[in-house]
Length: 319
Image (cartoon, rainbow, N blue to C red; front, side):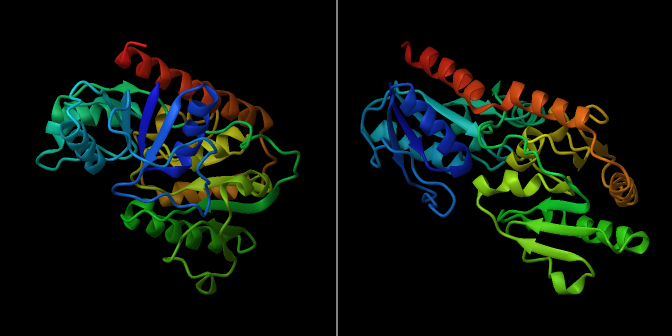
């Protein structure tokens, strides 16, 4: 199968591109709205960096690129080429978005996102969860520091969605009772200046370095206010870490309170701070961690996701 991929989400696509190459597909990668950032992920060997006129299937991950894929088909007189749209974010409500969604086979990453696409545009989609490489994100035999809690940041443009105001509030409430707790914030976090807090640090790591570092923390916390299931949450579950998150409609697809992690009512920063303080006084729950990995990989192992996507590709192309 000749697959044309538009660059959208390197962290997800790198895994999938490797899978398509290993499975014997002919893979092309093109840049339209985004360019591939090699800082964290290299384009897998065997991927061709060009745009063929007659692929068997086009895969896109953003609404603007979906429009470009439709135009590509028209320009090259190949109206029958199927397009798969993987919604890495919430469905767009912009005027023409629905027109283009109806010209693709849509993949959503959470049941909430699937319902949003249906409610806004009346468009059905297949639910396939965001992948994680279980070989990279695996448990480590590391003793956790009971006072260390990690928050994951990123470079998304809608910064308020990432919940930094809540994190600041949570930290202030924790420090009133235990100033020895250490919050470490990973990723791009311009809102947080460590000098303004008694025991806060920031650190930037490559994805492959995350598991070993996260293994030393008591828990990974997500004060996010609006997101899909982030890869960082799935990765934390996959390495058997305790996860604390607000009870978002997206997160509850995977995170089950008391079974494989801890959910806090939105946006109760008092309860969030109390959960951190409680965990800092308790040893790690190994059974909870083991269930977190099991539950995450049942839905998110990148090979499971590749099997599901490949089945759709084959159905659409008749191969």
